Length: 578
Image (cartoon, rainbow, N blue to C red; front, side):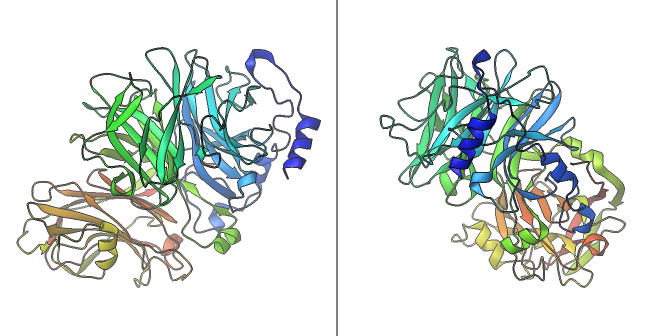
C-alpha cells in the first residue's frame, strides 16, 4: 500500500518551493469525490439512529475532531475520517473538513489533508490549528512515515484570503518534528500536537503526547518560525502509571469570569488546564494548575490529580477532545468524539460510525477546583414547541410523562428541590467508585432520596428506556449527590454495550436545587448535572422507542417525595448538516 501511494506521489504531485510550503498540484483529485459520496448517502430519515442535530458525516467512520477554529467569521471543523468504510482503517484516515457560521448548521468541504508525502504516506492522524501572528492559520498534525514512525507535519492554506480555507499545502520541511536516536522518543507513541502558544520570548511552543514505559508525558517543542522546532530538555509535564497520552490539550482559563482566553494568554488571573486522553482507559482526564512560563513546566494544583483518579470532562462516551478559543464571542469551546456502543457488524450494516458531541463552552468553576461545561447557546435556535409544566411534587414510585414533545429529538431541563434529608441512605466510605455504585444501585433499586430524574428514549410499555438520575447519600460531614446514566434497559438488542455510567456532583442539595439538562438525539443522550458541573454522554439504540414511538418521563423511584420546581422541554428541529 505504501508503494502504491508513493507512486501516486511521484506521478501526480509537482514540487513548488514558493513561500516555504509544499504545493500539491493534484490537491484534491484523489478525494475530490468526497462530497459526491456524501450526496449519495442513505437518507437520515430511513435510519432511526442517525442524529438530527449532532455533527456526523453521511456515512463511514469518523473519530477525533482536529483543529477546530474560527477564521474570518467562519467556524471550521476538521475531523478524522475514513472514506472507505464504517471501521477505522488507520492507513485510510484523512482530514475531512466542514464549515459553519453558527456551529449548528454545517457545509462539507473538500478533504483538507490526506496521505501524499513520505512523512504521512501511511496515515494523516490527529492534530491542531494555530493562528499565527500575521493571522494565517497553520495545521500541525501527526503523519505515519514508511517506517511506521509517528512524525509531526505542517500545512498552511494555499490562499489565506479564502475564509473557507478550501485548499491546504504541506511544508517541504516535513516532518518538522520526528523521533531520532538522540531524543530517545518512542516512535510508535509520539502523536497529536496541540494548538501552539507564543511565549514572552517570541518563540512558539507546542506539546505532543507520548509515553516512556508506563509514564505518560507531554513533550515540549519550541520554534521561532513555526517550521524549525527544537525539543526542550524536559517535558511540560509527566505522570507515572498513566500510559500513553493522546490528544493532549493545554489552555488558559480565567479565575474571575467564564470568558475564554487566547491560548497564549498569561497573567495573575489565569490558571491553566492540561488534558490528556488516556489510551489505556479511552477517557479524557484533566488537571488545573500553574504554568511556569520561565521554566516551561506545568504544575497541577494540590488535590488536582493526574490519571484515572482525577477529573474527567465527561463520565460516559467522550474522547479525543479538543478546545479552541472562539475570538468572536470570547469563549473557549470544547469538541469531542462520541464513539458507538453498537457492535462493529451493526456499524457496518448502518454504514457509519462516530458522531461529535454538541460543542460546549468551558470555564473554571468558582471553586477553582473543576471546570464547568454547557452546550453552546446557538443550539437553542433548534428549539421548537416548548412545553412548561407547573411546579409539583413527585411522590415516591411515580412517573410523569412530558407531553407534546418529539421525545426522540428533544432538549429537556428539570430542577428538583428536596426538603427531608433525615432518611437519606448513609454513604459507605468504601463507595468511592461512582460508576460501580451506579451499576449496583440502578434505576430499579429503590432508595430513600432517589433514584429520581428522567426516563428518555422510553417505549410506551417501559420495555426500553435510558435513565438519567440523581441519588442522595448522607456522608460524614455533608450530603453527597450521585449522578447516573443507566443504559441497562436502553435496548432489546443484546449486542449493544449497555454500560452504566456515574459520577459525583459537587452540589450541596440541602442549600441548592439539583438541575439536570439532557440533549436527546435518537442514539445519543448528553446530560449535564448541577448546571454543568458533571456531564455524562451515552450512545443508545432502542428497537421500540424510536421516532414517534419514543416517550419522555420524569420519575421518582425513591421512597421520599421530591419537588419539581421547573420542567421545560422542547422538540429539536433538524440541523442542516451535509
